[in-house]
Length: 227
Image (cartoon, rainbow, N blue to C red):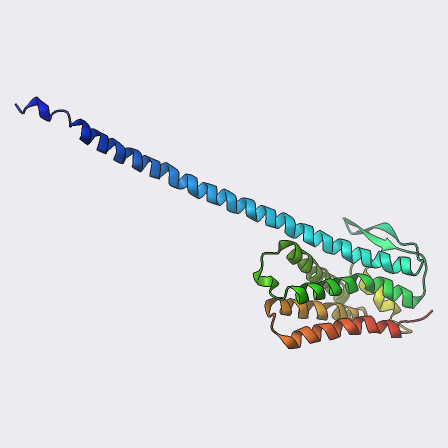
């Protein structure tokens, strides 16, 4: 029979074996825990960014509507909110007293003017926005582009509530009005160019083309109907 001293394993060997087993167990448990912590942190960060992004988009909406209100106040038209529906979808619009056609054109255009101005400010102050971590500004900028696109589609198809901004601009521009799709193009062009500038911040031609389109949109006030 083998000497008893050989059985069981010496205490030092047991300690080493236990240490290896414990280390393997810790690695098995700790690695997923670390991954879970990192995943939780990343998820929390994305959630915060999403909330800030949506806050920026809401700020863009407020700025758009504020443009209508400020223009209405400037013409003493007593701006106020009005509930509207398009099919089952409830929304609101800024209503006001009866004004001249030129004033109506300005009030209807003011929301887009604010959008274009804020987009211009964002892209001028932060030309590399696409590569920056700035969810609030990106949310506001995204709203500006999306709102212009949605209004343009509605103008091209001539659908939506009659209080829509593009229709208000179309019927008051010139003595007899203009086709609403023309207004859709007028609204869409600066937004499309700004979107290109966001992706290509060093495209000088896009910057000046966008600014020119915005200036044209304001300058059309001159030819808006007077009555």
